[in-house]
Amino acid sequence: SQQGEEDPQALSIQEGENATMNCSYKTSINNLQWYRQNSGRGLVHLILIRSNEREKHSGRLRVTLDTSKKSSSLLITASRAADTASYFCATWAGSYQLTFGKGTKLSVIP
Amino acid sequence: DAGVIQSPRHEVTEMGQEVTLRCKPISGHNSLFWYRQTMMRGLELLIYFNNNVPIDDSGMPEDRFSAKMPNASFSTLKIQPSEPRDSAVYFCASSPGQGKELFFGEGSRLTVL
Image (cartoon, rainbow over all chains, first blue to last red):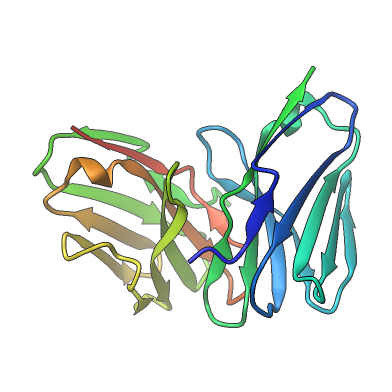
C-alpha cells in the first residue's frame, strides 16, 4: 500500500528557480527518506530525516518534516537541468518495509 | 563498491516463457528487496529477504513468481510462465539494516509479448 503521497505529480520550472515538492503520509513514522530517479535508472537516496528532526540540509537540498501534519517537503534551490528527474518520498514505520509514494516528476528547463 | 548489480538490463520474451532476473547486493548488506515499477501502480514491494531468509513475500503477485537467495551475494526472481501483464521494470535493492537507506540497482526492464 502507498503510505507517502507526493504533490504535485508534475512540476516544470526554469533553471535557477527553486523547486518544492511535498509528501503526505498516513501513519506514524520513524523516518522519512527522499529518493531521486533519473529516467531509465534506479532510485538514488538523497536524504533521510528522523521523526524527531524538523529540518535537514544537504547541499542544495532542504527537507522539512512536520509530524503533527504528517507531511514533509523537499526544496531544491537554484535548480539545474541535471535535477530533472522523478522524486519519491518513502516512509519507514518501524518494520522492515520502506513504503514509497508515486513520485513527483520534475522538469527543469534550461 | 560497484553497487547493486542487476542482470539482464533488458529482457524481451514471449508469453509463456520463463524469465529469471538476477541481483548481486552490496557486500555486507543484510537486507534485500525486490520491487516492481509500473506507471499505473508505481513502486511495489514484491519480497524482502533478511540474512538470506525470505521474511515477507506477500507482495508476490501469484504462484508464477518465485524468489530465492541462496547466499548473501546473489538473489533471483523467476517468473514462470510469464504473461504480458508482467511487463515492468524490476528493481533489486539492498540495505545495511532496517530503516536505513536503500541502494537500488539499475533495474531489469521486462517486456512480455
